[in-house]
Length: 543
Image (tube, rainbow, N blue to C red; front, side, top):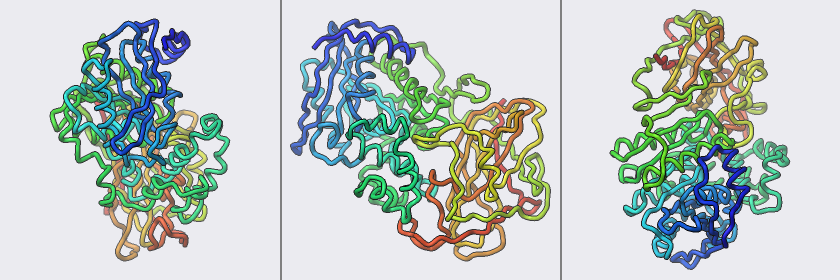
């Protein structure tokens, strides 16, 4: 069928600030069956300019509805000179071979889809891989073995290992795992997207995420076991059972030019930067854009669509944007873009800001008694903002959180001049606990002239000791990288606590395995700040 799709061309294009459409009429083929070697059939929609016979093909493989946002995007690409094929993963939206099991079939199915595209009469000789989040993982699943006709890829807001990203701290990123399980399990039910957008099921989800043990949260939320959630909460990051789906090992062999888009408040940020560095080390053309938005925001979607059009054009002979630096990073607070030759930038110099026993933060430590607090997993320290997948993500006022007895704060004097930090952030904290295991959560905030405290970056690490001791031990923690301008007159604040629930599954303070544990023990925590125990946060001052 041939349609003008004026709504897509005018409204979608305007809202997302896309280049002017070049094709007024596009052709659509809906619900096309793509046979898999094992007999499953994946359904696809294809959109193409009506008059173009040599347009390159953008391939999007998704576990979400190909009729929803991906459908709008596909038509927008077609109106700008690309054929676009959107394929549903097996077990989703009419594709057979299910039920859907994230990651498990994307490699074999992906290669079968590529072979199918190559056999079509409309195929012009070049393929581009596109899509964000899970759609980015489907690109990594085939990238290392893709033939030379795959000319570009777009791993946006994603990771080459996906699930293991949620386990890298030693604590499960519970909110992301549980919400994604909920979304993918319930997405084909009536009004599913509206329920998520309106937060109709939020109370139900919060109740489920407070359930112990955590390995039954999917059953509480969904009403049935969800295998991918079980995998995520029962396996450790280095569990060899992840190996068939961990595509990090492929990165040195990937030769497809890749354009990465990451977000300062995206849960995949750290993994995506590692993937970018791996491609650079392999000599593969790669560029990186880091935006200030959250995973599911309009801004993130906008950046993804624009980047796809530009990078695809560069590598397929289509009209493309102007050349730019290999790395573009948005500096929050300054509201400006920074062009860099590499990440992290060589212009940044690490600078220690020391925690003082009096609650100060500055160039020198101020000695005194340890700062103490009690962490009780029965009423765990809540999460406020940060690198979450969906609800509650991003930059939030932390004042209410900082008023809790289980959160320590260390605050600088008002800045005499602007401070710009760009790059890697870390903390070295001297700490003791009366439990054999505990979590250390460190967050950097900006305190404005009104006293509001906004989170900039943070990190968590799960600590386990062979023997409980009152003697402090040094804990090194990598926070997520950032780019932030702290204005003159504002203050820096460091939070110290022992959790951020349900973003991270709470530490129960016991020797039980984390996925089956139910017994909870309060932890008495002490943070030291003196000449012998100089706790500090290291910030990358940029000049």
